[in-house]
Image (cartoon, rainbow, N blue to C red; front, side, top):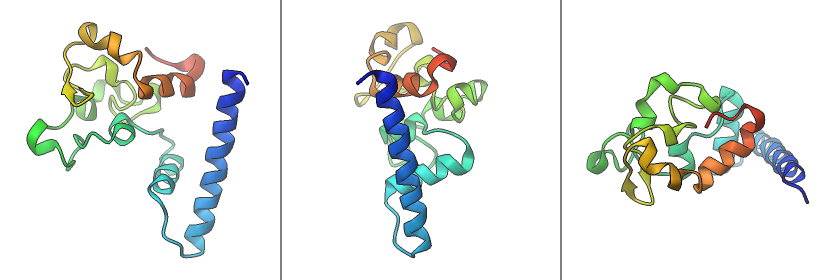
Length: 134
């Protein structure tokens, strides 16, 4: 199976999941976290941001804000809408001070070698295709 076919299958699966989520919501069934993410993305026209994907807890009111501070990707407005994200939420590799494997990272040049192996980076690159901003 090619990467393109695989991505199309994921898209179909996500769409099916979204329909299922909407059906269950209408039927009064409690929605899963995946349903909440899918319906929020669909409603906002935005895709999942790094703080949601990685569950770092460094977004506003996140569980790790007290000990690690708010993530600069969450507040960096100059990258808003890059790769269809909020602030630098889908462009976090460009921002110094983001969290990776439980450690706050340094500058773009110092952390890029880790970022290009990151599951979120790879996911965003696949989702954005030719429109991907590296």
